[in-house]
Length: 284
Image (cartoon, rainbow, N blue to C red; front, side):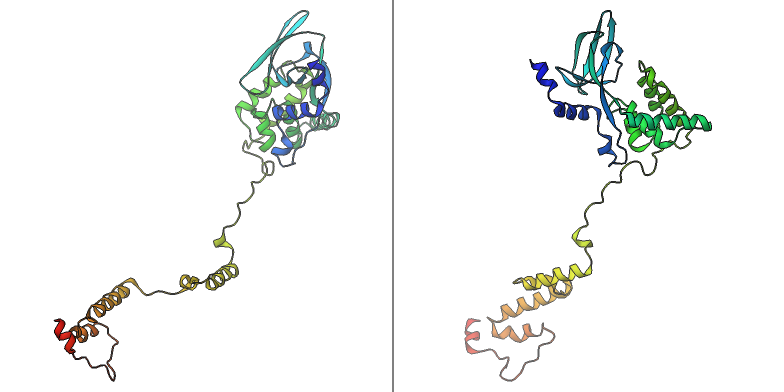
């Protein structure tokens, strides 16, 4: 009963397979959008790396297979650390993911043209082949499909990816020839999406915006202090010393004249005689 219920959830199952298989359309920002389809395939014909919709486990990939007629023992993986092993009749069929007909025609046309011209396949054909031969987002073929970078691990993985998949071997050979004949092993310009630029900070908003911010600061009570110009620290210390001396001398009239001399711009006017008063003398 549980198995029949799982079979009636194609949308959820497809989402699980996308998480296991990766999403090249997303990872390449739409620059590469391989087309897939599901077809019934005998369990005895499965190979490591095939993505299958298992009735009970859901979206899984073949991690290992052992044939003991009339049965086949399959070790499944969901991309995590856990695996599951089950026994099936070798003739039993399960929905298996593979390239859609449109992509098969494009790849075959590219391979045939390369053979006819006696040269390697095009970069676009190589990229599409990698999109259908990879074994998940952690594989080197998946990374190659994103940015086009080559490595020795990619070639080793490419050889293992067609083990048990004789129908895909011509594609693997064509992709191997492309990799060996390409001189530059670095990422192909224009394949990987360009990362988005970070948002500009307020300091780099431009002079007009900065002037507007200063104008807003002046409108705030006390905000004008932030836009004033200040004297140097040495002059400020001298002024503070003079002000302190004047404050002390205010209580001692006899010292007022001497304190006023510390302020360089002071000139006594009318009514500002600097004579000690009687009260000041009494205090002394």
